[in-house]
Image (tube, rainbow, N blue to C red; front, side):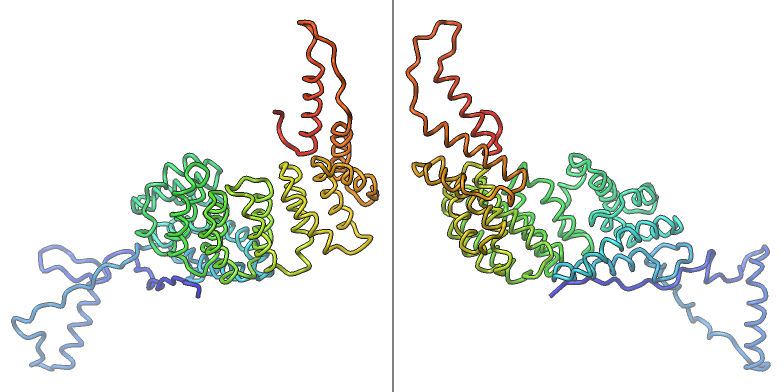
Length: 434
């Protein structure tokens, strides 16, 4: 259940001056407004009490003045236009996105654009309300226009913690990640206002993920606990799953992947996330990559059949480029089984299967598959993979020629041939020069 934190709207701002002003008992003229008010009050008391009308009983103490307002005074702005109210609407739309609403996804983008204009047009005094300063921070950390924060930074009434967050959020929004990390990494997210706590933890985890994945995993745990059921939790889960997978934490991966499938099965980011994960497995960027095949199959069984062919082809392509022959053959074979005859999907499945076979002892079979492809159904990128695979197959099938003894200035033919082979393999696998 989404945890939506709502703030009680402050009462109307007090007018300038002392709302409880009384006439002075000392010599000197009282405030002009106080005189008629005092006379009217005295006359009213005499009318009610007659000649014997008395004021308060002797010894009765005057009532204590009410406490000062919780929020500072600000120019009159309709409550619906207050930034902290507008941000509530944005958060609600974000939670709909996490639940899979395509319409909400477009609405979120429109809101971020419209909010940028609305926030810049507000009287600058509204930013003295700390709720509005926090809302501006949340807006930018959600992907909003960072220039909005330049209106808020420097307001004297902004508390120290929010001032630090404002600078960190501005750096993050402008892409200055090192500066953003320097401003935000020491903040304790759980001690922040509920509006910002989960979001700040999410950004902290994102900023440290490459440098310290283990620490990032722990921070994402905190983000999920602080903002359950929201887009913040959904994003934290996605990033956690990739990190634990790369680190080879198989049991933790199973647990988190199960939570994601259960809590956010219809998230609009789920499809791209699956592609990202499977591509990572295919490139062997994860520890114990050979153990991921069965887990990949398990996760793919949760995906609609209509999506599986595309996912298997994506895995096969990434595995081919990454030189992961086992996973390339596995994924290409699955894609071939699910593809309809005469479709481009079938041709691509056979392409990746043939490319994987030519670097094994079954290279003749792979060569046959590659030569039997309908080139008209392949993209230019697919054709490059086919040509590179055929070149490798031709080089592998040639019987080595015995070279004459080289001179000091003549490189070994075997070395030259090996270099040429590496160049062709690099072209096929998309790797960097060895």
